[in-house]
Length: 264
Ligand code: GLN
Image (cartoon, rainbow, N blue to C red; front, side):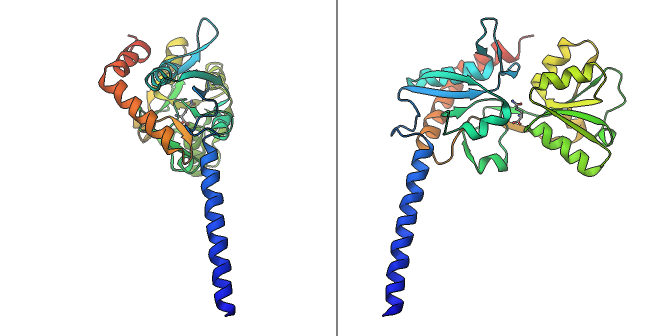
């Protein structure tokens, strides 16, 4: 008898816990049934200091490949897109609380995938190494013991920390904005900056004194950018993936690549 009561109580407890969990997962996507924080509007966070994917345009508003891509996704879904600019390191915590999604040249990582759901990948990248022109730093081992700059909370930051783990005398300086690390490289305060390929190439063109080196020569692996959405928001993720697919087949995606990324 006692055993049976315990079993019933346990069963009741488990069901309640399950319902509570399900409710929580639903709320992560917002209080509306379509999974948006505001009806009819897709609020998307970015970090507008990552050209050519996101930067502040001449009109003072966020622009770039990612911004244009997510606006096109909004058009497909009949949603007005509102962009919120914030530090890269704040994006993850804002998804599902302050914003519906984030597009920020964000690499899919196992760690991040525990906290958010990613769309299908939309761009392949790799980390590059920015160095002073004529620098002898050409391999992974050359980076050991050097002063390396990276942007806080990025995959470049993780790689810099790996190098420090391999060689403790390595100094890693993290910055809110990649451009601040680049400025310290230009002025000689850093030996190298580890940063995604396209922004690294943009910065290398802006500053005469530095050059961008392909991270593949340093053993860095390809990375995939994706849009991050609240964990468990299957509805929104499906819609975004469907829109992405349409934009890839109808030529819009390629047009944006030409417009923002292959500007040469
Ligand atoms: N792709 C890198 C990452 O996801 C950097 C992104 C960024 O700085 N905007 O960490």
